[in-house]
Image (cartoon, rainbow, N blue to C red; front, side, top):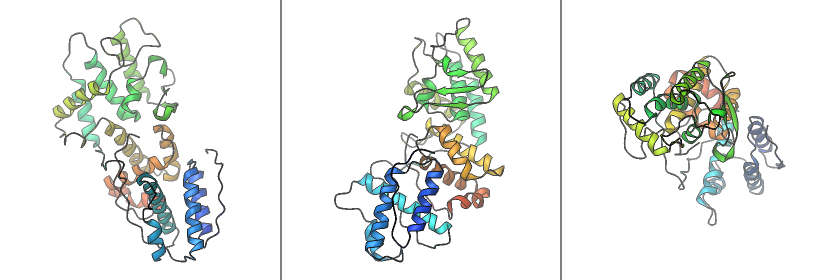
Length: 328
């Protein structure tokens, strides 16, 4: 669990629930420093105004954007408030869920989650890419796309991989400089490890130096996002998967989203507890906190209605949520 310096003392009628909610989030690996300050302000507002019911008109006023409050700060505050209300409902305190406040700082976007059949067909098409003279891209892309889907990497993490970052004996990947400069080591299957090693031996023939990029350009440099994206669009077209236009996907990053959703669906169907799954998935994906990972439970429940009841055990009543266009 991450260290937490701020430990607020709550005084309102809902002090026990607020403390329990905060303790629960921190037990799952969330630092919840800023959020703890917001919860203290909420508690103080409830206490000062003598509120006994969240349906009180005063609570409606509290949810409004303040005159000097930024759009981002308001979004964070109301999102946290919604989480707390959902927590109360899961513990038999029935409270209407306030309307979701859209983050005006980012564009709303629902990621494209590939079906397993689409993933299989996409990789088959990638394996049959036409050979190009003086280029190893036709051999690199099938392996790169497998890595994005099977390990949920960000495209920048995959293209930055060097041979020294892979432990082939233990089938481990080290992401030296992930988003927010977070370093993590993650496992992969032995079969994927073997595919990468076979590819490297084919590309480099006899010389395998630790500092070499796993997916180099013809000039032995790191592949850019644009070049990988061009191959991705070509493979989508040959796979018969429609692209809905710029900014509408499917995007390269949707392979990462798909990895998360498919992983959760498999694990939940096998009887795993979402309370235990999310912290593990959060660390695997390199998220800063579990809040960034929770959205995948919503997506999983929407795509696989057969596990809705199991997901509700974690979230309470699932409410439709718009997934923000983010690069997590």
